[in-house]
Length: 257
Length: 257
DNA sequence: CTTGCGGTTTCCGTTGCGTCAACTCCTACG
DNA sequence: CGTAGGAGTTGACGCAACGGAAACCGCAAG
Image 1 (cartoon, protein in one colour):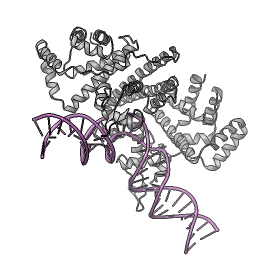
Image 2: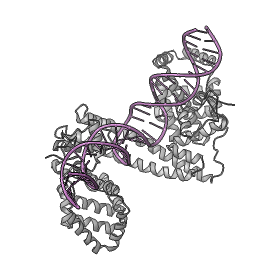
Image 3: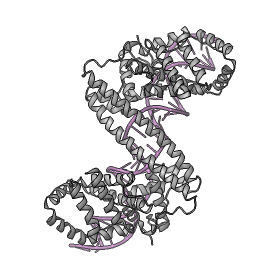
């Protein structure tokens, strides 16, 4: 019993193009290829296709499906990892839904008049570069005050390439700006959107050092107490240092309890 | 005051590659291009970039952003449509999360032994093609029993190209198989996953004819009462006709009630 | 003999860039 | 004054999972 590609397409509900694609990537090679180049599928192929479509409906990628079917990975393990990805993606969308909904409400409230909610926009991008002298001084100070954390972070930094460091720098900058935008929009620091940024901030810090609640509150304090840091944040937007501090404290209280 | 591309990249937290991309697609052309080809940005460009990044964070596509910024679309309108898309996407992920979670639980329960939950798998794909004689007979019968609905559906079919009809056929087949899989997995017909399929089924039917609750229940009845339809469904999997009927009734009761 | 059907391969397009590669221009250094 | 380096440029390819179109080929019927 052998079926042509169109037969299989009709039976399974996928297009022949898809079947050819699955052949091309080695996911579902046909049992036999005729002398005229036509693909012929057998029952075993239909069974394999059935498994493929089942997992595809669960949202798994073709690579993962292939790994599972070729017994190079365990079903449950793959599914659990997939489940985690789905969860975080859903939460991200959930946050987006709320944010967009709030934005719509704000825009409607303002009745389409002045939508420049950002003050000092010409300075909002005014960069964040501590002078290298400042950076060296802060580094030395950190070494004295928190020797263990300094050592950990030093090792983490050494494991980074130049490109990694540039990426890290960009991420920090982009995040500061997002937080600044939330601030000038009047978002309270306990808002989920702000706390999501703080979560990203915390995870970023964890790449070098994993603070507990008290330590994270201590880090927050330096944002307002250390004038060199404070000026950097306030240069982005007035009051950003305080705002960041408050948001971090809330995060420490509610998430690092 | 003019900034180089690297300046803008540092200030805004995006890469210079991104800025070049935005230039290439006409989203953010620089204010000036020097004789050496270097891009120079002014304050107005930074403002525009700021707007772009704001909307990008809301998950809008670059095309939509461009349409808004060039006043070819209204912010609120675009955002509302985007909000709807986000909502349905989040719901889809939500369903996926639950489905994958259930699948994991099932796999763990069976302790990795026999995971062939599908009975008669060699027949699962055995196609669904009423003979053309049957099809003509059913068509004629439908014309007598429901003349108005028949006329509406005839017009809808005539508006379809061959490719459309093939797509439609494939969708129907694929859906039948998904429902069959849910059935052999023992999913109750009231389960959200099954009801989601019924929702798709209902919307599919609506392309030709929009039944109310009673009419949809009547359509469900033909699945079990008409032996020609029944045999088609049961050929896919034993009991599928009954299962489909029950699921449609529940859908009619809860969603069309 | 042509028409048509059912196959085939090959290539472009989708989204938002990352990541080379190859080249140019300008400045600083020896 | 030659050259190394840094900052900029323009291509071009890659990703995920195919959709769609073009161009070609073999085989049966009218």
